[in-house]
Structures are given as structure tokens and as C-alpha cells.
Length: 83
Image (cartoon, rainbow, N blue to C red):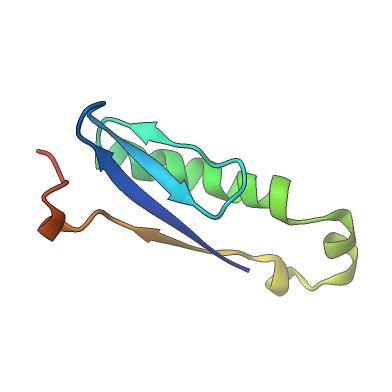
């Protein structure tokens, strides 16, 4: 299981928001550090809640159930990382 989380800077709202393939994961934070902390706390929960079924729990090995969550920071070249 592989999932991706992208942090995108919203200049108007002055927050980072998430774009992700993890169902139910919606993050908004004023700093990248807060965004990452929230993502690390919530992403595994959302994967377990919304991407792992009871059938998966009984039929797959634990190693197959451990998700890989890839975080993509905003690109500096886009000028989106505020101080």
C-alpha cells in the first residue's frame, strides 16, 4: 500500500493544505512544521480507517498492511514556502 501527501501553499488563506490519495485526510496548517506533525499523526489513522478492510486484516500479513506514506514538500522553485 502506497499513499502520497502533497503540501500546497494557499497564498490567499496563508495556510498549507493537503492534496492526498488517503481518503479522509484533510490538513490545513499555517506552517510546514505543523502540517507535517498533523500529517504524521493523522495519515496512518486515515489509512487504517478508510483503506484497510476486516477481510484485509484476516487475510493479509502484517507486512502487507503497513502503508508507505510519501510526503512531498512544496517546491522552492514555485516560491510557495513562506518564512
